Length: 73
Ligand SMILES: [Zn+2]
Image (cartoon, rainbow, N blue to C red; front, side, top):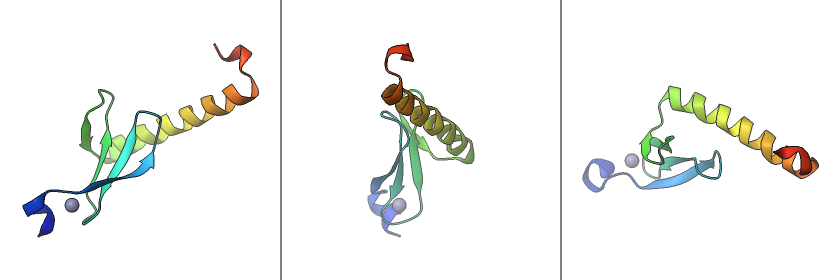
C-alpha cells in the first residue's frame, strides 16, 4: 500500500480556526488535526467534537467582531 511505504500525503481538508486545521491524506482516508499544543494528532471522534465546538466559537467571534467591534473585549 502506498501510504505504508511513502507515508501519508496530508492536505488541508478544513480550516477550523486560524490555528487549527483538519488534514486528510490524498491517498487514503487517514485524517489528522492540530491539537491544542499546535502538534498534529490523529483525528479521533473526540477531536472531531472539539473541532466542531472550536469552529462554532470561532465563527461566532468573527461575526461579532464585524457587527460590534467596540464591545468585543
Ligand atoms: Zn494515507
